Image: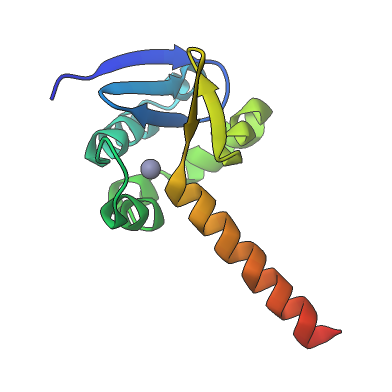
Length: 117
Ligand SMILES: [Zn+2]
């Protein structure tokens, strides 16, 4: 599949169909940039359990964790990536795996609070 790469100035990266949106500031970390592009290419164009699995464990991306955290803290707009519903080129998209992970974390947090209180 041929991918169309478009630079953005917020979030980290996302794939919508054959289009990959990537934060232009990631280019300052070439190894991370390539690992993120490869990660986005591995995603399916829809949603499947494989996408969730990939987001929870991608060994190639894990090797660039340090640069990833550096990039995020130097570019606070990258934290917008944690919003599961975003707008790309006027089209709203839902990141289902991100939403699932966040709901699971909230549930876990609620259970912990219930046990403690
Ligand atoms: Zn991903």
